[in-house]
Image 1 (tube, rainbow, N blue to C red):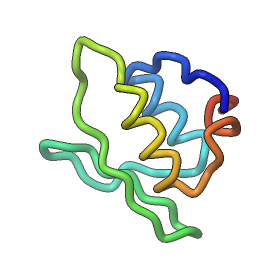
Image 2 (tube, rainbow, N blue to C red):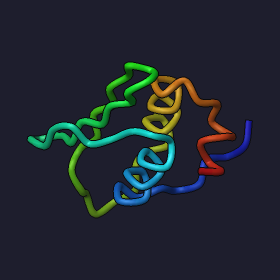
Image 3 (cartoon, helix red, strand yellow):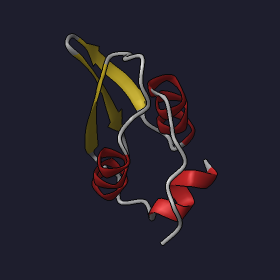
Length: 73
């Protein structure tokens, strides 16, 4: 498995949109929804640091996208 590249919260939100997810709600977390897969992904608001690599793996599993493919988005 390749090493995960550091990804900021803005970049992760762009990757979600490229994968077909749309933001449906904003509160403490912005919630993204994929209309055909019926999957919701909560994303915390901006932080000064990158998303931890463990959370990146967990979110890519929830999105049902292989991590290598997620890195290419």
